[in-house]
Length: 411
Image (cartoon, rainbow, N blue to C red; front, side):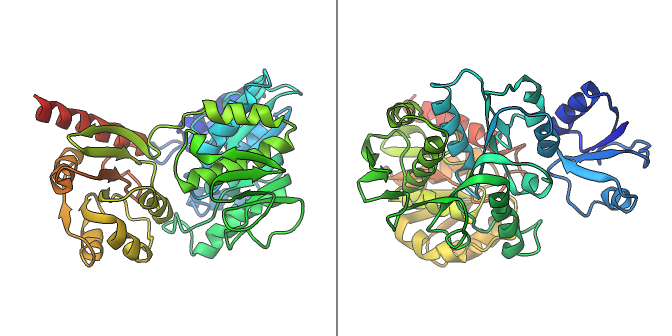
């Protein structure tokens, strides 16, 4: 049997190793290097970043070759239960939250997918009593065929990746299609894309009394109450993440006491509304994971007296809906990257705006604009690929620049 792996990043390499172990003769194609690719293959495994209309894919499909993604490939060899988590924002935090609670009760628990650990890299270790928690992006969901999960979570669906999808509606349909691949789905009732979904569904809500809801002080789930101010992850978006995780974990049979203990012990992931430090009255927050307008909006809602650092790769998103919030919450903004000119023009209608060429310049400008008080918030609302390898590198550079600034000022 012959298999072609299209795209040789982290997931492509893991898929190649798994296919070889299963007896396939593996060929690799990547746009970054040219190879002679046979067209008489039995299977194509494409990486998530490869678009569906890639010329080579179109040739292979015309020949009747099956095309799947790395997640679908791994699923075909997986044992045990699967929890899948998607959403425009919050999916990494919720995936990690569920995983960390499960580890307290089960020995054989795995985490992967869009989280940064390819499913195919550990699938052969799964057992009948394993539980695998997968973060899934819309790109990964596109390539699913037979994939099923015991519990599926969709946190929210807001505009993103409009440089790849023809419309928000087409992007939303991909996200929502995960419902059809889950025995039970945990959905956000406050989301217009999700609230009318029927079937084996459990809803959470900030506004309505659903299976899990927030009464302004407590998260209430199946009669259990959890005081939000006692939980380590702050912000209204994390209230939603806790509610979603609660419902998923209860569906897996965990006791409430175990869930509550696990929540209290999980301190969150880096680059998500992460406090970096305070320099002479100015607090610096690293929210580099903010890569779309909705995530930027949620970060702005969490603070006051803000100097915002934003910008990066243009994903075709509309930032105008956040202008009223910007006017209310932000006293100045620093913009950078490919979107700098566009954001400067838009934001300057409501707040003073400066442009920066580097992260170090942005941090220094933001500190000066803060004028001794408030919060400098890195929440770009854009992808990072214009200046950085990924959002993690962007966040680490920000933290380094803040520490350097602190050392200069305190010396």
